[in-house]
Image (cartoon, rainbow, N blue to C red; front, side, top):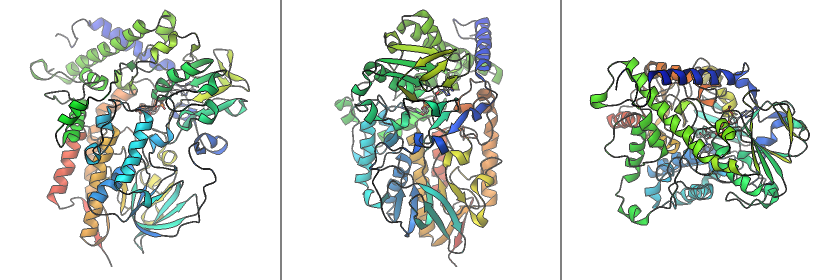
Length: 604
Ligand code: NDP
């Protein structure tokens, strides 16, 4: 290896591809950046508020209870907070959930083909605790939703659930040391502790395409799939589409999973693509019961750590997960041992070359699968592996060989031009359709207030959004000063893992510890000290620099706030040594038993 290149890749090829990636990025940058999207609110509210899975007639009297712990959100993060509290014997909590059941992401996302994209043995939480064996390496939506319910039953959480209820605001009352919680059902609850378990990918967003509300046909967002219209269910069988022309707008992870299923059932599908996803192999397979029964206690934690270590570029003796993700992790980590590059510049070049090799593989896969060379060329992604969330699917690319599927490349106009009463306008042509499916993603990197969709006011009525206007200020990403007894599960100055449920579980364990300790030490409140928080923020800010440079050079998307990464972005400011290192840090912190950096205030 010389000059930072990999065998088979010359410096010139690397340079040419760097230039190509830059041009592709510039071609897609829009002056309106993140403002190109409209909130699914106001006249677009039906795209988010519609709950196709709930009883619309459901009604109940407003609640006025005083509760010990309010967990807001009944997806995996809320369920994990509840489970980890229960394991400590703390059971005086309620779970407030917008859906009509537990499940969160998997309650809402039932689109055909929906499937976890990290392996189910890592992704599905509490497998050892529940003794549940996933049926396949990558479980489909029904099995995952059932698993949420299984957790609910196992920990007896249903009697504690307040379903079909959205929290609108929470306000801290210093005199009573209580949070006042108001909801869309006129509840006026009080709670001593609040655990925010809202998930990170929840609120659907729409592109601000002119004419969206002029469309005369049927339209919905992937996360609110309308089976009453399409027929069938998450496994397919959508007979209602047999005579329908369908437009799918967007080609991210949701579209990659649902497009082949729609193509199998619809009369015709037009896929409007602005930026192609990288689509790697999936190779799903049934779980081998022999392997399953050979697993030893502690295996799930070990597997998750193994996965997270590889994501952080740490060498492991054996790749326990062995899938498309870990293949990618190998491709983008710097060589170790004797091949270790000597300088940062050398390391960057070596990693770039290996990233290029991986993306060449992804592009070659398109050529091998798609018959029409022009369509194949349009489906090839030209950016670095982790610029966008990689996808893994063995059906998506092949479905462009079908006669009833048309790929419409809208990259030149930086998106679909317009929606009319009859259909979708792109490249000056009107595509007449009966149905538009918006696979346009979620409020992930948007303004924090917009993402959360509720007001949060701490001590002295200070809004969390003002408190964090110049960047997050937390201790361990989970607590913030001025917001006593308030805990946040999410992507926030802690370690990020693409296997989000393992991240949520480790956070839930820590939050359960903090609440339990506050109760055991007979304190009224817990929050970070000024100094504890400042130290953590300084540590996190020290990590920022490298990641920001990488994201700034990426194709626009939610990873980089549509081309301009900035403080406040969900993916900005993480504990970059990785999830395993972060967990060890938290474990040591708990083992010390001193609650360092926290302040406990006794009851008056
Ligand atoms: P994404 O944000 O990833 O994709 C949105 C898509 O809409 C992009 O292709 C985007 O193009 C396109 N788009 C936006 N505006 C326009 C426009 N005006 N005209 C044409 N196209 C447009 O959303 P997804 O729902 O696909 O995925 C979101 C995230 O959710 C994933 O990244 C993943 O983290 C998670 N997810 C996980 C799954 C799993 O684990 N199984 C499955 C599905 C989602 P462009 O790229 O050019 O902006």
